[in-house]
Amino acid sequence: MKKLLHIFFLFIFSTCVYVSCKKPYTPPAIKIDNKFLVIDGSLLNSPDSPSIITLSRTVKLTDSTQAIYPETGATVSADDNAGGTFAFFETSGGKYQSPPLSLNPTAMYRLKITASTGDQYESDFV
Image (cartoon, rainbow, N blue to C red; front, side):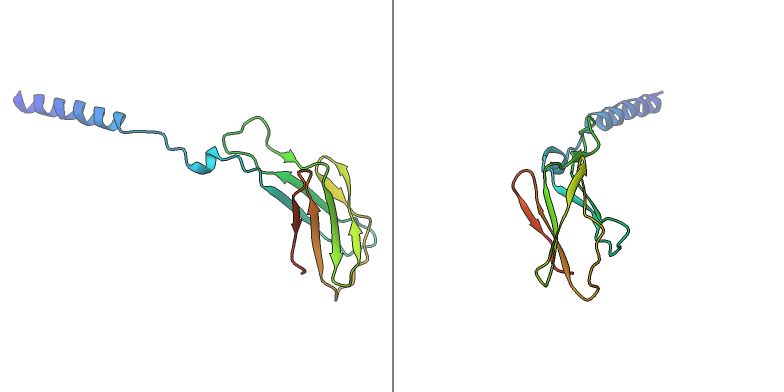
């Protein structure tokens, strides 16, 4: 009987320790609301198809109200290393389109973006 009582108290004690030691962990990345710019798209060398770039902002992991925040009102262009510029225009929320392009396959190109916040982004020539 004494052994059964010891086992019962040990079970109660270990259950209390297990339950009381659990604390939720919220990493710092969940608390920060950075809203990084996300750029998705590519330049197409096609006289028939336009190039489309989609701009959006990141959301917090705990944000359940909206999955995508489109970046509207930005200025998007592509430059070549010879000084040529190709402008994109906004077609719908966060989608930017160029006219069909005939690109020089030996040239190098970069993407330039001025966000609606005024922040400027520029890729390397590739």
